[in-house]
Length: 274
Image (cartoon, rainbow, N blue to C red; front, side, top):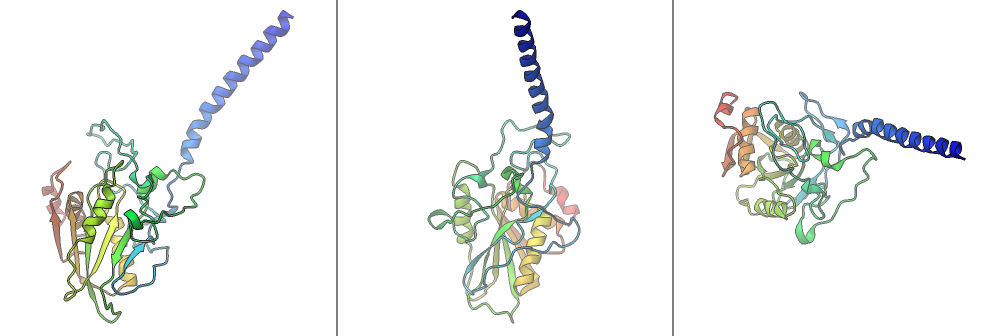
């Protein structure tokens, strides 16, 4: 009887150890399977074409464009914690004491909606993500953006393009809804119409390659005057206007940063790129 008890105990202990070792060895493999919602690797040098179809173009209407959200980009900057749920710490930086949460996963704030409305008019999108998808990695994907079409838009006329970069978005609040309110009050005279585009970023800073592809995507679908493309932004968007303009120095006719957020580094070195 004692022999049977000892044998049973030994087998039980063996099974526990085997299960622990097996689970421990599988943990890295599970992490390696994590993927962002976007699967098409974007070119670092060439222009990336949109994969989604544009909505119907009607004068005076705001469009929601998700044509670039299937593209996967590299990290656009090397500064500390520029992405949500990011554990990467560049050399020479100290890690933040907090983790910025993925605000786009909160109800009513998913930026990949089909309509350009938030608040009471918002329609929650339904995604069919693959099993491997970790939605915290959505910052790797191309920009979803809103385009306001001028009234009486004509394909035979070239229009200026004004791009507005919003400020940082704080999780646990409706701060993106407030950012969208700011977008809506931007001055758009009927006597001097222009195409007005507002990308939605999920990183802390703005990414020049993502914005460059957005501009090309707009030019593919609307008649834009390439000599009259303008860039503006508020707070972190103002900061982004400096960063983007320095990296796309031949793109913009003028920039207008508004209350730019200064840090974590000086803008002065950026002038060397311009």
